Length: 238
Image (cartoon, rainbow, N blue to C red; front, side, top):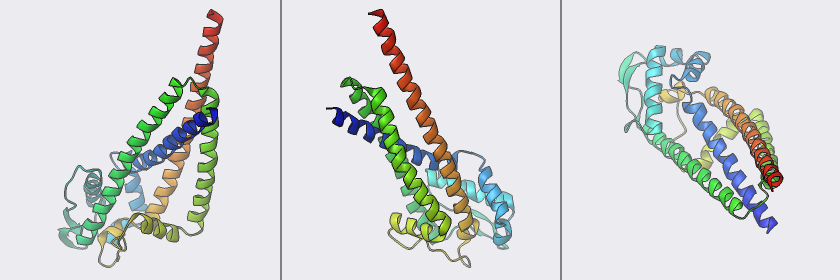
């Protein structure tokens, strides 16, 4: 019975840890409604010069694109001044690829919500089984951290050694077409979002995620202590 309870606790913790990873993506992408991170990246990589646009116009395109990805806009289309012309910033390939990206992103958020609900149900089940949550949660957290720490180290080394190759593998895993392969001469979006932008974003996501894992660890320890103190109080009363 104890092995079953431990397996349930570990599964619940894995679900929570994975949900935190998906949440880290959301925080980095949408955590700042004014998109200051994007603005700094555009300045860092001279995006305005590459596009022949003003920074306010680039930010206007960005806001529209981000609204589309989160589902607040139905069509990815915005006219602006780019390369000396007043035209739609996005072409048909942009729209097709970003439709895939939106589906992936919104699907990830839905999956995150399902994971959190499932984790809560598993923890509730452990409570009904009157399991030793203090011991189980600490072991489950330790197990999850060991696995995800190893994964983070592996990915960190891989991305540091060859970010381009890792970025390519990511797209081949999550996309079933080659629409993500853009030509800087004809596709404005790849000029606005160069590889360095995504490299910096990955680092930012990793930092947020590590902080979230640490917060989960603190919350787990505090929850275990409160439960232990509650048991001690009940024993003294009896």
